[in-house]
Image 1 (cartoon, helix red, strand yellow):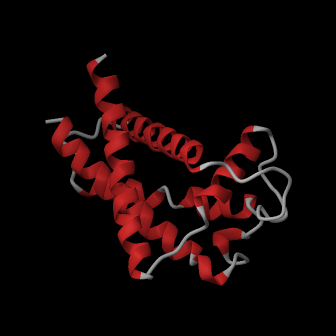
Image 2 (cartoon, one colour):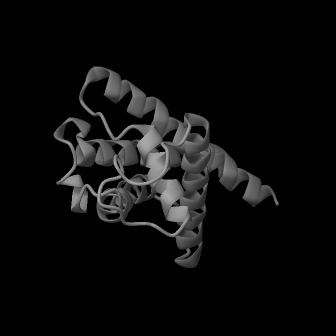
Image 3 (cartoon, rainbow, N blue to C red):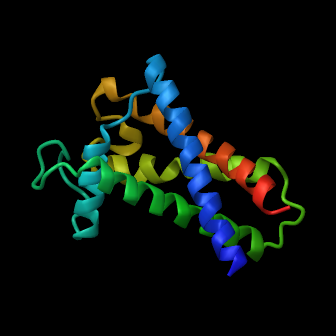
Length: 159
């Protein structure tokens, strides 16, 4: 039970680091990203079985409120943390090198690059998406931040 609670906390911390760092990068103008309401709309569409749409901006359905998007976002962050823990447990990676959670965070960029962006109608790696969204740059940097959060969380919580 303790490990379960620590993993939930690690997922929340990692996602929070991603969000705070991502907000700072967005405020600087270096990244942008798709609006959370559209990402939430795509997540909602995916839950209902429509993963791939022509363009999420014009597809059926309403943009999802920020509160629901954040719920989905943090659930995904926690699930990815559980997956990371499963992987390191499966391969008996002990002690955990500092770079492993960082690398894992970076690897999670594959999810938006090859599933979410095409699913939203923005093409592989977001290459067909609106230029002003800076999709791939934003995804890489945000997921790197998730990895930094994961590194910190595992260092703090799993001593």
